[in-house]
Image 1: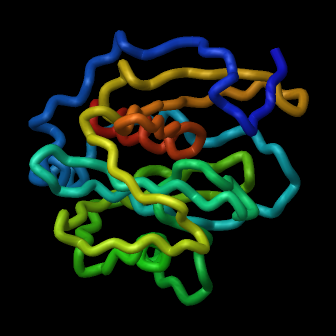
Image 2: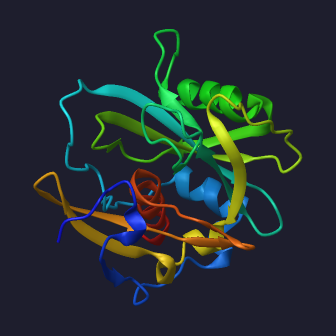
Length: 223
């Protein structure tokens, strides 16, 4: 079945993973997350490479996966502005391409988070990195997982970020909310995860690379 990838909500739903266990609340605490990254288990990421849909050269990038240390932890996400050249209007982590001056993938993620949402590095505790994720748009992304002080002052950069919002970590780590979608686009069968979140009267449609990296975080914590 063919459809437009610009409107992923219309793509056929092929399954929901409600048969998989959710991550226990005790494993979502700052202490448990620190321990998991300090002593990681053997595990295999579920999503590592999307099918390419262009001929651009590969570019290194990093995103920050910011877990806000509230009583019930949340993940800070952005909605990208509509005028951006790639992934416009989509839900994303703060992040972007690596600059020559960046000393590491972590430095890229922290710089981009500061530029996009005003997050100061002093309010961030980096826990570690998930495996590389290669997008169909030719970005080789390092997901940098971090704890964020809930008192951190944030300000969206209007040139890049239309909106900031938080989603409960427990929601994202419950596979009952992990939808699988598939469609034929540009002659190739493409599959992805989606995690639609009802934020009051508004639906936050988390899908594609962002959902794929969150799925890998789930697998890492479930291993």
